[in-house]
Length: 436
Image (cartoon, rainbow, N blue to C red; front, side, top):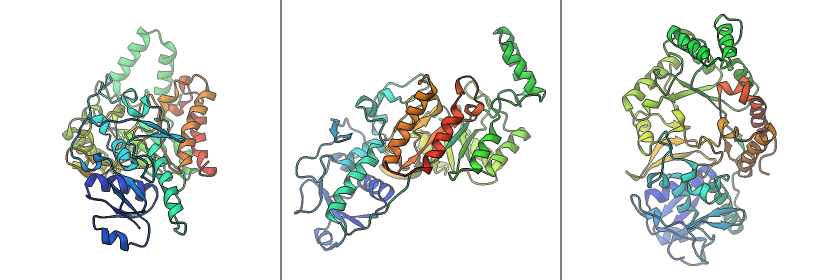
């Protein structure tokens, strides 16, 4: 156990230290404000305050972990060997930056509470982030900082056996619509037919009716392929099905259709299944509650995980609604058009409510690559290179790599050509040695 001496034990301090030591490094941590208890402790220990007590491992504390609410925090990002950091600590400190305050700033998504420009869907974009502005979005910096501090502990406690973690993959399959043409109903089929004719898209029209007459497989119907991949993988896939009502933004399959319900149940036999929250349920708890009950009725079990439509988050309301409805995992944190680490980590963490100053039971797993973000790379070779760069960053810290692919990504048609190969690279990445 690591004992931390500090002048004040705040909720923010406990949250940040437990994320770094317990969840990333696997070391239990306790806190004390009593010097005698600190001196008597005969294992790992450090002080986190304004001045060192004597010659112990000392990190000079920034004020942010002892504050409440939001303020305009001054941040100066600086180079730190192979990475970046902020909240400089001075020469007396065992490390040059207060990684605990910096981690809190990134994990709590502090910057998303500050004034910023949203995109057309009301989302916080990578362009508004500190990480992209200062060129560290491509790194899981919090995990890197944690392992840097572990080296300090190793030097001071050479006999202590530090636990090791291993690189892993958590593949996410997002299903906004299970089928392109099937199970869409007469009115939507006629509407699609008219649109094909008006746009002179006779190839699509031809294919549409081949599918409807059972002569061709629907391009979105890739579930047998994905389940076969699951059967041969050590990593559990996580599906998110949209079962919300039809709207301007959500054009999925009617959740009352028996064939669609059967599909969800079949997938759930092999993979984990969560709820893809519809666009209008993002800000309406009553709609979200209805969709939660609908999915629980299909699965015949409690809903554990969600992912918000369009990767849209309104902090803190989006997460607060999940907590109130006792949904305890979310996979929305990430950027649509930019690969990287929105919260600065490749380790799951808990949502900290800055308004109420509490750590909630909602576990956030941020994703690191969305299939769409790879489309900006023209060639398949460039896509592979971009994907491997993110994978290698996660491997360096033996973290959990979380990619998101859609069911139609595996159709291997048009812009999705080669994506099956990319998915194979992800699954095979875990068969190699962990840290580079």
